[in-house]
Each structure stands twice: as structure tokens, then as C-alpha cells.
Length: 182
Figure 1 (tube, helix red, strand yellow):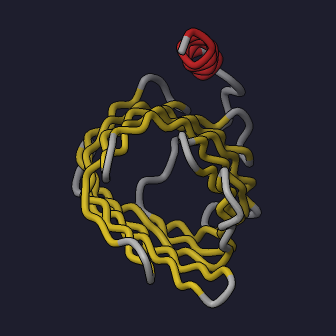
Figure 2 (tube, one colour):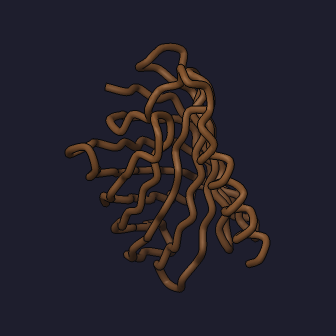
Figure 3 (cartoon, one colour):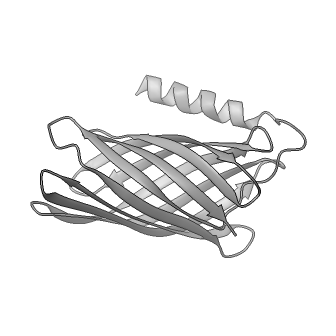
């Protein structure tokens, strides 16, 4: 836990430093999709596809959703997240946020509903490169602290490609995505 607290503090401190003055503000209106891979402690490591997005209701509140489907040895596995949150601009290139979500997992052998609480930071460190970090709590069957980090490279103001990695207790999640900001 000490390592997680240190890593989170160091990441937040990194993002609070004002980067390139020509960088832009994170966009809260986007859809994205791409490849998804789970890496579990056992031998259930499904991969598949995911779609997600965020929609800004005003300068502070946003909605978000995600749907993923994966398969391993003919076992289907789907996840769904629906929620929203509050965001605050720290400077011209960095936003922090906190949110709450409904969570659903559905597979051939396990179904459960729950919730998650998240807080994070999104920041442009150059006009083309956005990085993010998120600390969360996921409660489906039992509570689990999560940590997610990612980066997106913007080809133009609307189109980006990126990757993220999320650490959880029993499974880690890797995503490669294409993003369209509107």
C-alpha cells in the first residue's frame, strides 16, 4: 500500500507541473474502441474488444460508459460500466476528476453487479501527448483497489491512438484504443 500511495503522489506531482505552454486542455467528449486483454492469476486470460466514451454535460460534470467483450476457450466474458463524475481544471493542460459508476460483469460462470469509485488526473504534456492516471475502488463481490495509467497520442485535434494498463487484485487489464474527440 505504501508503494501505491507513493506512486499516486509522484504521478499527481508530475501532472501538476505546468508543461508546454502550447499544450491543450483534455477533451471530455469522445468515443473510443479497440483491443482488450485480461491477465488473471489463473489460466483464464480472455481477449476481445471494448468501446467506451465520455460526454461533458457542462464545464464540470460528465457522463461515461464502457462495454467490453472477450473470449477464452469458448467462454464469453462481458463487462459494462455506466456512471459520471465531476472534473476540475488545475491549469490550462491538466484536469482532475472524481466519479462513481455502476459495474456489471457477465460470463458463462459468473454474473455480478456492483459499483466503482474513481479519482484521477488527465494532462497534456505536449500538444500531441495526453497522459492519465487513475486510482479507484471496485466492489463487485469483494472490494478491490485499482490503479490505471495510460497515454494517448493525437494525430490531430480529433483523432488519437493510445494504450492503458489497469492493475487490480486478481486480474490486470491492457487496452489499445483509437479515440475520436467531438
